[in-house]
Length: 130
Image (cartoon, rainbow, N blue to C red; front, side, top):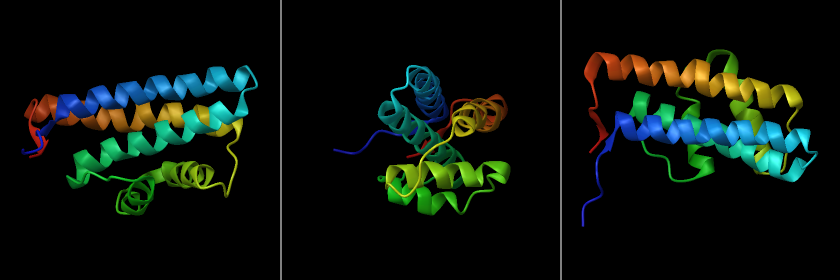
């Protein structure tokens, strides 16, 4: 059985799910559930980065390690440290800050989502990975 193609709309839907996860991290933080906050923060950040990897590099990373490694091939501008922090939270080398939670929301909906929308508006719902 062949894996199905991954289209722009598939990636946009996945990103929007991860934006929800990022907002969940904010709520968890306000409720002082720091363990859940950390989980929601690093998952939404790294899986959002995976969406950008699919768009820009046509690569589907299978693990957090692979997402982080491949993210170094992207121009993440001011968000490269955020992705590094998210990965380090995942492996237990760092803790998030409240600023990271807000920056993550901006990263997903002000940096990654516009890239997906720009591509969709130009090319339509093309398959990114076949």
